[in-house]
Image (cartoon, rainbow, N blue to C red; front, side, top):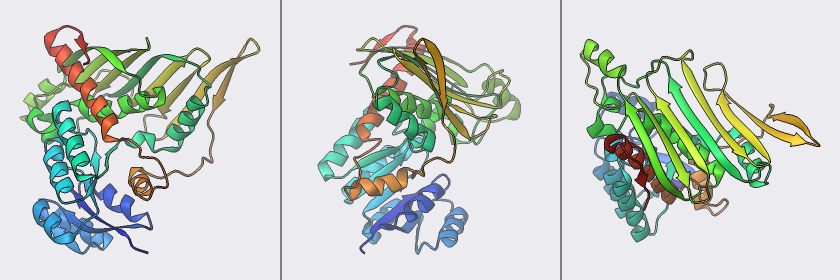
Length: 346
């Protein structure tokens, strides 16, 4: 069986791309690229990857790839994706899609021009709990969804403190674009991606900036952001994300939807990366709660799903067009916070 030839750019977070693509029988990671030669060698050796490059351009020129996974700092998502499309590759890009919506549109145009597919790794869709909830929502158990709240807070959790995550010129923003992007997509996906109209946002940096200054680290993004989105169908979505907040929990993730017939929650358990899902309805005048229990049907991660879609076995998921909507909302929250007023989408 002919396999898709896969290359991965950035093998820090991209090590998950390597193992994820290799899980599919129709895909094989044949090349990896990273500027850190020690990390490059470690991941290539661990996964028996023959092609090893410190230049993405050289990898694309030599390897005749079908798929490229991009897992670099956000600043490089757009140029690397465009480069991969020009080389005739499909692209799976880490979230956030780009630094801003303008760059996201360039990526979509490049994919269309090349006749190739673009997918964004919104990983919380590709979980047992997320899929189970989506099936229930699509079957109408909530009725019409009119309100949602989606949250990812950390008490103190600045990734790679002092590195690129805390620098606006490399990341585009702080926890909103890093953590909030995940919970935002999850809520929008469960809601059916309604059309956004107005956005209001606020950002703060009271805690992390002081911590960074004391530690002599570079940090020029927010440590907490909040936003509210109103949609053309009348629904409202609230989003909150922080790397530093004075809360009880080390890690708090929760997405709630309220509908005319029921509500749901997707949340982490005991401050960990384990999750649970519940649905709340009324039956014959009495409240009933339904909780998802293991064993859960096995699901595959985004990498496997991407290959399945290229084979025509499943519809495309987490598309560039959906990634663009997320970027437009993130841009609007930041713009609203800076301007001190609501922002109209389109």
